[in-house]
Image (cartoon, rainbow over all chains, first blue to last red; front, side):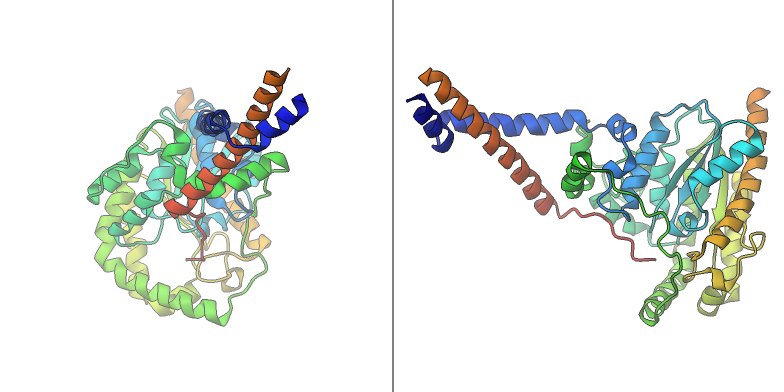
Length: 351
Length: 43
């Protein structure tokens, strides 16, 4: 008799079942809102957050939250920038290991590099550097682009990182800051919703294994070369129009890191590909603009291609390295520079 | 006994349907928001 009652209660709709259904769905939504916080992101492996091995935005979000919530007292390096910078060094772990050996004490390296990072993304990522940060922030230059393009990021943030810097840049572009509820998953629903199923899968099975380098052993195809040339021509056309606003934004990014040692870096550039499109004059102007900005801001500007002895054959295209040997050479030169600057930082803190 | 069986049945139905509703809400929101994982094309 009671098993018939149970079967009927399970299978037939009833007001009670509707109430329980709504309560369970609401409870799960509330649970996710309570569970997924920046602390949760930082405490779990980055692969738990990634949709696939190439999901560098999730990787960077994890690294940024780890940096933000980590120990500001530790000696560390934060690398912020675009794909050309990401592909230039072998790994953050290699840099940390080499630097720790050079300095004689543990050095943490936070890798905040991802493809297609614009100047306003650099602002967002720089905002993760905590106040009182004891280390060096290496910020890569990024493509000079129409400042109005910030609208795309305003509509759909790429990183789940709350940033006053980004709000400030949005405001300057005439966009109101995105409203915040204080609930992390709700505020960054555009980041979490497309990753919901992969996050659940990763927790039930295993975290996604990140693919660090995307161009190893690869060479450009004819179609890619054509599209790249069109893109470079557009950049050459845009540069004189937007350079003033772009470098003002870079300056604001550096300003916001007041108190931290900042280095501006030009990631590897394949001159044999870029020069025929840009022309030598524009390339020289670009280099001059960056050097001038660094001088005005009182920071160092690094361009390490010659020191790392990069050749045309070390590149996949106009800026991405395609072989481990070149990455190792570049990493070695980068570590030399970082060791020198870190020693200065450590000395200043001792004094 | 009958009341307990009925309550258990309703709870079980609610638990399953609630979970399905939760998944459906997430999928609906994902579709409506138009959000997607950023794919870097090389530039």
